[in-house]
Image 1 (spheres, one colour):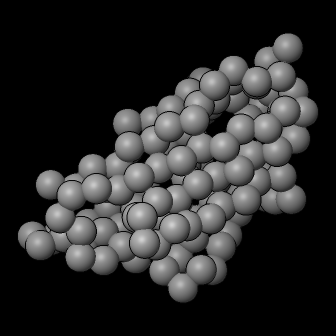
Image 2: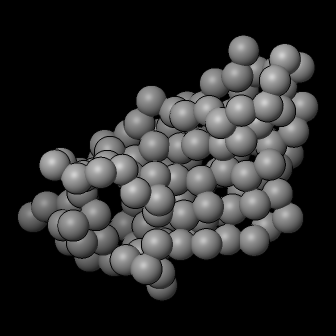
Length: 119
């Protein structure tokens, strides 16, 4: 069974930084991409950043220049470095990945980690 576990969410002041991490574990044959989504209160879930197997990245316009996604393929981990945080970045952040296991290929989600940006 494949699991994604996020960590790193916290309360931070505007202008501050946080680093989110997500580790995939279980019967993993291949990870095609890993990414981060977020859901702010009263809003729909939105893509924040994604990184492909060959290292290509894409970001939401709202986070370009402030957030950086990176991946450690050997450890099946993805991180999201978030700088210059704004109150509007407050949300539950979810890790996701498209993973081929011994049984199937599908998209997995983590349980979410809360990021709150407030003074």
